[in-house]
Length: 82
Image (cartoon, rainbow, N blue to C red; front, side, top):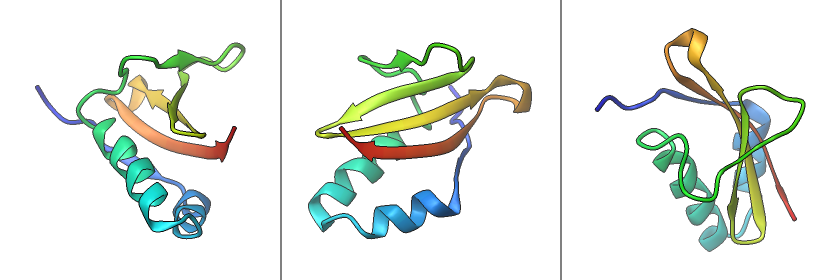
């Protein structure tokens, strides 16, 4: 099984650095795990946005797009607290 490529937008990288270290590690681990399993248990497809998915990491939501046209790339879109 091949790993997916993850592109994290610069704004997401910057926002991750502003999180407390334990939370940042959990969110980063969840993002890294998407390379092996882009549709983990509990994933939600966002209505009106084809290919856009959401996972929850504690009180945070990680929103990303699975781009099958680019060979299965995961494009880091956004994250926010719920």
